[in-house]
Amino acid sequence: MRFQRLLRRLKPAARQVASRRNRLDLLADGKIFFRTLMTAVKNAETSILLEYYMFRDDRTGSALAAELAEAVKRGVKVFLIYDYIGSVDTPSSFFKKMVLDGIKVIPFNVPSFRRGIRWFDRRDHRKMAIVDAKAAYLGGFNIGDEYAGIAPRPNIFRDIGFCVSGSAVAELITIFCEAWQMERESFPELPVHPTGPLKQGKADVIIVSGGPHQRSSYIRGAFLVNIASASEELLIANPYFVPGPRIIRALLRAAARGVRVKLLLPARSDVRLVLLVGRSSYAALLGGGVEIYELEEEILHAKVMLVDGDRAVIGSANLDQRSFHRNFEINCVVDDRSF
Image 1 (cartoon, rainbow, N blue to C red):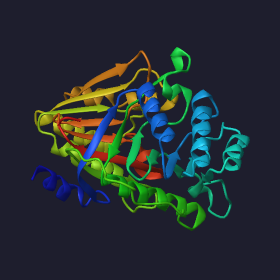
Image 2: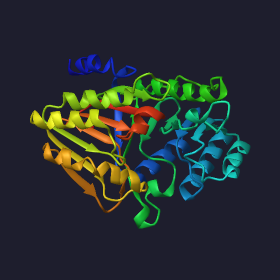
Image 3: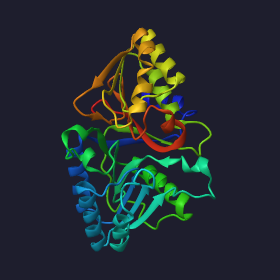
């Protein structure tokens, strides 16, 4: 019943795609995430779909590219979408090598006068890998050493991810194919159905896909619905906190009705201006009873909201205007106390 109520509240705010009885496994840091992802790639049998804002030519990126090439040799179909601007520091030769290895690779939204300046600003900020149409690996992790926890200490990003297995994966495949079609005007030829039974668990999952092609921000709408539904505790970790007045008001209303609202934000950031702008909202939030903490040891990059200890919103989206209106994003609303 609780899940159905949440669905009704989310319906106006999100592309409503819900599934029951999924299995979710938390991947609590970069070392765990990439070890798990690499194992899945090594064991892949039919298909691997990857969609990433940033794919670096470093130890982590090179190791993953090598395993993807080995998968192609086994007959696995491998597809990669990378964002052209997000991966601008990666040499084109890196991706050309992947193509020569048999990986189907496309850059998302290469600058074009035909599309215009406004379209140039629209980026694919998703971070997603789908293996054998059975399991998807999501969260805030890009492909790079700083996310894997092997960069020099001051540059390590603190992130979080998860693996979802079950019927929710089918919708994630659809979202990937739609992104591919935006650039190639045709869907990739791949097995969209798993070749065996799906793992089942206790998690109900709602997929929230957002992008500038939508008339309203589904990503922001899902955040607002979950903030409004909190009755006891609201825990939020986010690296780029420039949420705008609607989110600020929602957080203040939650605190006013007795919800304990706690924000974990970065003490250091790779985007200094965003950090300064975000701090300009601290006074109003603190004055309204919201607790704010800053992570100092590492650069916070996790994007997660926990509601009353039994529901989570987790994925690629930041609490900022880019994620609400300009980026293609993917979040999951998870209803599972054990997760």
